[in-house]
Picture 1: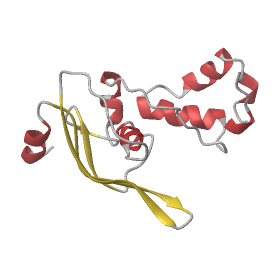
Picture 2: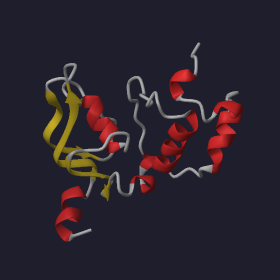
Picture 3: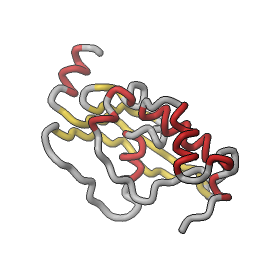
Length: 148
């Protein structure tokens, strides 16, 4: 990490610079986050407040590696994310409203992506599927599961 980056992120829980995220829409790309520069000091509990559609959930998803930023940089506890997310994810607590799974991905693929993101061994995926009664259905698309 360069000296400039170290100074910029020192003592900060979260730092973003020029963060941008767009999604495809019917009339072209829809901007969810545009040019976000954020400095959140370490040592407290923080929440994102704002109206629906202002990019709160999208920003948290990008910080946690659940969505890919189009551009910009992000650091959590001075560590660049998502590149080195496994190094810091154990120090982060976040509640993301209605976690989204890709309906065409299998349960196994979805859990493998999550395991990789948090540094959990892939061998745990099969164990978890067995634990919740989906051991024989790991290759089924996520949308094929029913929820009670």
